[in-house]
Image (cartoon, rainbow, N blue to C red):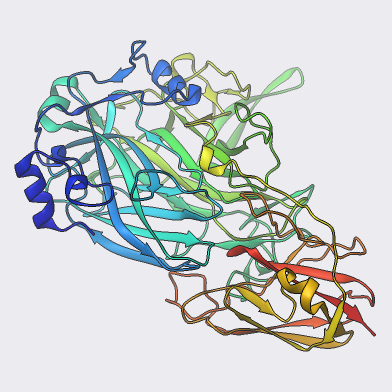
Length: 596
């Protein structure tokens, strides 16, 4: 991490820390305005980003947000020395890499960069997830999160997250390397910042983050497998979605029945506190955005009100009054970009190449009361692949009432009609809610190498085996890269096939079913956990992460070995070839043939 002394020296000299380092660094304006700060302007040709600027009413052609007041600051955390195959969750205090003045954050844009400022392909290395926290807390938990989709967080016009110079930021991150060579990267985050005095002149109002997570924990993950759910999807934790959780344990909805509802977060009761809100009397949700992993369809957020609300509803020719206690307020849909035309979505839900749709003013605003409950679920596809270590996170922005009056426009979620059209131009001003969100950015080039199955299956029959070792980024025996030399090993029906990770204290691997022949160039959408044998029979198996790592904040199973029962009871048949891969090291594939 860049040292305090180096950063102060950079400010004194009026140069960025990048001038004294091989990689990106904080800009000198983090502590005071030195020279000309970058304006908070549209910095991309991306039409989806431009739409947000236009929607908020900023003037073309420059689309500068809060001209003359807002400063765009770039911060960089690093250098991060990524070991071969790294997949660890790490948390580190960040004491300088934030605005060192009182003011308001109005936009947050994350990225992962090499020392030369380029962005590496997602199939080589990516920010599996990054979570920004503050001390003291601004809201109910972390104030921002990012994954491979790199959702941008634009606060609606007129609102921002208040910060102080004395606050400390922390970063919990997981950089995932899928290659065998070490590398150096930086986590960067562009922050739009308005100093306190200018924010007061503009009348910027505070909004605070509300963290919503289907499995609140240091590493909040779950599994989804293909034979679970209904109608091609599974919603967790409401439904049972897999045979076990990412650690191989049985849990609610993971080998055990779902809870039938979801995960609840209750807003403070009247007079209670939430982060920077000291006396909560109600408020307005002015924005919300979610995070899922490949295979994810959407985040589902419902609002529940204890005691319910009396609502008039039409039933045929009659109007009746009912007490309603639950209503959907947000569908955080994942938009997978089209493989051939990256300017539009419509690709299959199995790639890192996607963007999350978000909602906020002026299209969306939801009134909430003390004690209201926000219920989260995450819905995943179950037609194409089994997915493991999934997430379902959303961050909402809450503008609290002041003096008993709302500080933001919003609708009563139990009474307001919804507009489900993609081109929705409704909003609180028209008494409606838009339910088809907008993506904050279009396709990113680093996610565009989709690749796919390719090559012919060749190779002779190899020796019989009961054990497979994992080391040097290979399965031995059975690695498909050596099938022309050593053949494909055979496994007798009725055998428990043992897999052992010989480097599991430093590099983690999985044994995960993929579709035969599981050959082709590694990409952001290949190989996949879409297990299918040479006979066309679908099967899903996954060893969990074989390795010893930090418990509770990482996904390692704390085991180095795993057994796969190659038995008739498990559906295996003589003559079929089974292929598998490591979903952490996608270029590493293996296989075996079942014999009598």
